[in-house]
Amino acid sequence: MKLVIVGGVAGGASAATRARRLSETAEIVMFERGPDVSFANCGLPYYIGGIIADREKLLVAKPQLLRDRFGIDVRTLSEVRSIDRERKVVRVEDLDSGRTYEESYDRLILATGAAPIRPPIPGLDLPGVHTLRNLADTDRIKEIVDRGARRAVVVGAGFIGIEVVENLVHRGVAVTLVELSDQILPPFDREMTTPFEQLLRAKGVDVRLGDAAEAFEQESDHLKVKLRSGIVVETDLVLVGIGVRPENILATAAGLETGPRGGIRVDRAMRTSDPAISAVGDAVETVDFPFGAPTQIPLAGPANRQGRLAVDHIFGREVAYRGTQGTAIVGAFGAALAATGMNAKSLDRAGRPYQAIYVHPNDHAGYYPGASRLSIKLLFDPADGKVLGAQVVGSAGVDNRINVLAIAIQAGMTVFDLEQVELAYAPQFGSAKDAVNMAGFVAAGVVRGDSRVVLPDQLEAIDAMLIDVRSPAEFARGTIPGATNIPVDVLRNRLGDLPRDRRLVVFCQVGQRGYVATRILMQHGFDVRNLSGGFTTYQMARPT
Ligand code: FAD
Image (cartoon, rainbow, N blue to C red; front, side):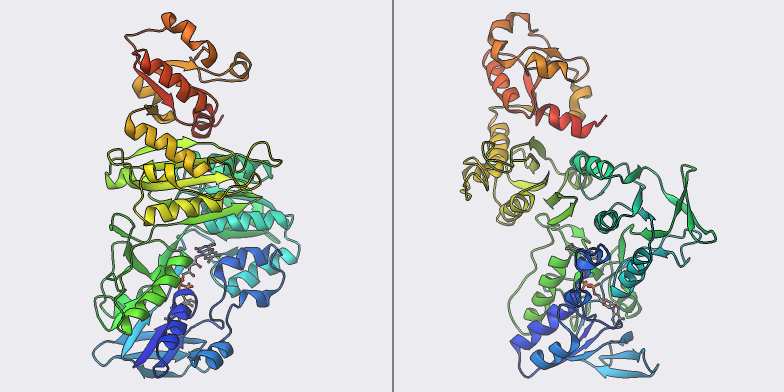
């Protein structure tokens, strides 16, 4: 068996080493057009920020290690230019010498990744305008910062954009963040990004939503970025991070099937439309989990797992990729925002029925020092309670909760399971009723009909009487326009004041007292809903 792999980083290097572990006799050739293989793309922003001080640490496995330990024929600075499927050969250019040659294969794996999208903006090719994909890009950006850049414009508030923003701020650079959408981190539901956006602003980042870079111009010693809004930002450095597109040139030229967004189509064994060629990682269109609809999600975890799985299949093992769930986390300035599974936007697009609830518990017991608030949005099937997706934001314990919820989705669990899951607890780590249990209690209550909830964006449509069940002091500090204050502790005495011919919406700070109020009112025959997550959710959905 001669296995040829194109691309030597996440998916490619995983495939190559797995292949050797499965077969001592296979001939394994791995082509990488860059100078490095198996480098830590995900660490690049932190090298710019100086948090990872040693560049060597980014080189997870060097070519020599792959040769020595795994017997892999690693060829760097070697670009595969074309595939001849009939003859099962690839044509390779040695970028050092310019020589081209052919290499045959029995099985070929394409792990070519995805390239940053380069929109047709005038000035995009100016020397100070960068994208970030590899170590060479990183070196160029870091050098500008090291030379004393004071100002930067980051175009695109996706994962990479946000990570670069944090690291530039860490280096003392004043950053303007420009994002076309009306929110940062478009893969999340907008309200869940609000605390993060507020944190960026509090750290001095000039966040400009609903705006776009329209031109970059070189001045004598700096750049000008013209925004659609008419604003001109002077800067020393621009990073454009508006997303990636699959590197599919080889595949399309060879006539392999691709999806509408360019991802190479693969089956559950990661085989392309040519069974002798597999494809993995950012270059492919896979299916989502749990629904199995086509999707393209460029993340390191799926790329690595797909690399292993493609090889397992090639070496005769029964395997099937389950689909990509999109479990992701981004951190900045001590906070984290994470997601798994479907979000409201993707469920709306897919036309799937769902219910969302919010909870805002502490990351650990409130009586133990240092507790901080987590906000969890849980999306589930309203009929059977199956968990479909979750998003978590906070400053501690976010990774822990999203990973639990990710496994719940993988396991096909329901909100009733979340009520029951037993999670580790001591006061400094969690609560006896963990945040995940809390989300389960609330969601299960909704499915059982113990509680009805309403979300902030549904308030107008249901035209209900709004009752703020918090204390008068809390009410005085700010409430939802039009709300009447009836604290939950006096609610039973005020039932006569409430209309029976109109729907009621109750809310408190985080939804707990609202739930108690809902139970009281439901049992007295009122048509009532609890604003899920209370005033906290409202403020996330409608920040002032
Ligand atoms: P890549 O790792 O991009 O590797 C593809 C390789 O193929 C490239 O090195 C390319 O040079 C080579 N290649 C392409 N065409 C050819 C050819 N014709 N011949 C030879 N070689 C070729 N994901 C996360 O999950 N978490 C994170 O925190 C995270 N942070 C990131 C931060 C940054 C700055 C970047 C750029 C990405 C980050 N990602 C993160 C995404 C993650 O790195 C990718 O999803 C993952 O690397 C994809 O793996 P891959 O093997 O498909 O592609």
